[in-house]
Length: 136
Image (cartoon, rainbow, N blue to C red):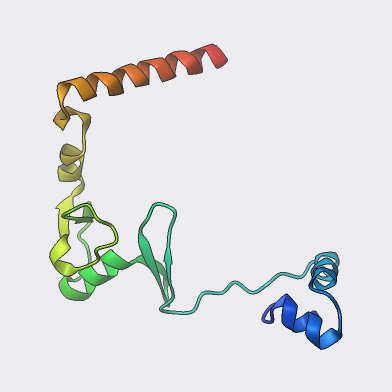
């Protein structure tokens, strides 16, 4: 079992040994066996923040960055690749832009928001600080 456990499903092992899946799981836990979780090159996963990542030989890279670098070369230092329309799922060269981190900061800062929304954000921050100060 210890040889097959990393690569075979518990159902397959249970069928081969004439056991239940639960008994295979329990035995694996006692023996401290773990399933293999190796991603193959080219495999894609969506991270929790919604970005699509692709496995390469050197590690994981965001798919939109890989596409940009494939057509335009490496991303310059202190620059980021952003989605023009804000849609992280639309990974097309026409939807990508390379901007400096300074420009990114000016685009997405509170200063550019409507006055009423700025006040709500500042008040929420003040309230959060007050709550945190009372808990410490």
